[in-house]
Image 1 (tube, rainbow, N blue to C red):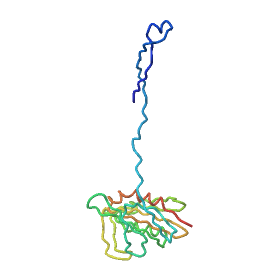
Image 2 (image 1 turned 90 degrees about the vertical axis):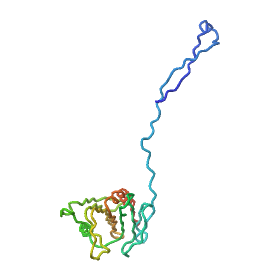
Image 3 (image 1 turned 90 degrees about the horizontal axis):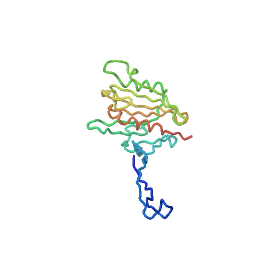
Image 4 (image 1 turned 180 degrees about the horizontal axis):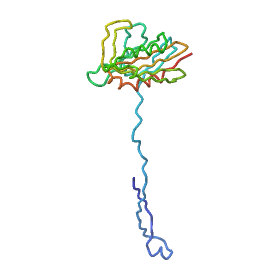
Length: 210
């Protein structure tokens, strides 16, 4: 609250009482409370810079965080790849791959779940969260899987490295124009936790040009 002083002039001379001219005014100070405008408790956070990524011969595009390191895909089937880094020391970055793929959505979901195992030998499907969303007219399957990840050098390579404490966020974008697109980000849980919102924000920007 802020107080504002208001001056009120009162004539106390004899001339005033007798109807004459006020020659010696006296100022009586009266305080009035003025309510300050409350400041925003939390200023709106600045939007993160993004870059536009265009795939499927210009038919599919989305906005990815500019802070994510863009990588050269190791395999031709991967159309775009990023390496989101963790702010904590000695924690590996995540790997995000984006590609079109054949097969049914159900078969690919099953394949992703099959890449994880649990230390207590429980069923990984019980540790998987799956949600269906509608984004810009497209059906999108969102998956969230945790456990020990079988990290293979390639789709058909053997001798996978078992990486404990991993997490994967996946999005399968279903389209009738360019087929299904698969967004798969996996890595140490700490790294994925840090970039979860960025991943979901990116998925919300996916658009299809007819």
